[in-house]
Length: 366
Image (cartoon, rainbow, N blue to C red; front, side, top):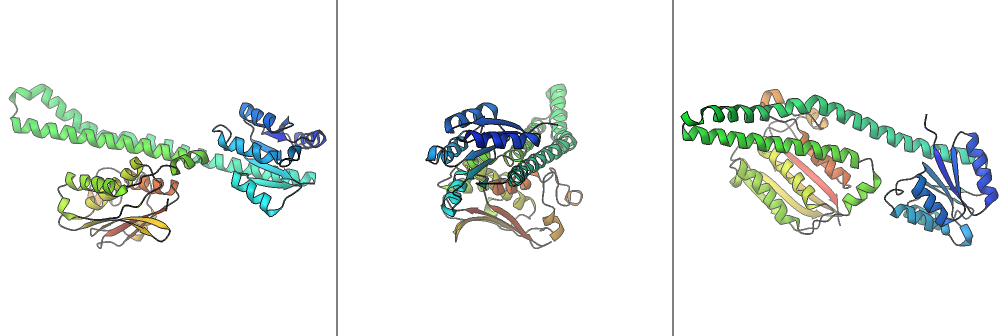
């Protein structure tokens, strides 16, 4: 069993020694630092599981400076940080939390209070790690089960057509050769999209467990999204010959979302709307500001989903696959939902069987 490593930063040697003795009795490995610079250096070098830091070192609030340094460094940004202070006023606590502190331990404290605070924070860290490992384990299992099957269909199309062209190209009608070439191209594009979706989904599962990565994603901007939404939606409609069915109502409102991710969301939602509705029925795409949010929606008048199907939205599943005989397994919708949630928004589906669906994305305003 791994021993948790705790860094104690305080300019009072007697208090550091007292904390060290108490925590070592609980089986923890303890590292000491006497000031902000030493503490930050040891944190970067040794990467402890938890940091206990005095706020008022050298009577100058150096604890806040230490916290700020570590939160700005990629390798230490996610280390749980507990501020120790004899001046636990609301303004100081709020300032610490704004800088990224995880908890406060008011001085003077009893040994039992020290144990309770440290143990609670480490349990929370372990819970997050366990959840991340559970997600990764599930992801590995799903990929190993589903990827070979889903890749086989487009690969079969590519291989069979290519073999026939290689063996009999001289005797085949030019129109048949052109048709087989188109099938190879379409199968290749399906395979490319499938692999891209797996990679994006795996990346999002990993990003979702890392606070710093989430912050980096949310710092991206698309300042003029209307043209991007129009182009992505039109491209999907052109693919199935339904440009005239597309109704666009777009307002240029800045989004806290990278252009590539916005394009991915639009592509997946419009593609689903076109797939699950009949030609000559409208697919309405809307982008507008709404109160303190940005709202993007795609509305179709197709077969719709039942309440149970909506509840089960997730990766590696597809609505009524046997009945509709569609290829793929719904990973695109799960990716869109995950992308929206990682960026602090929400994706909802309103639908009923036979009456169509509206998928709505709400994102915070920039």
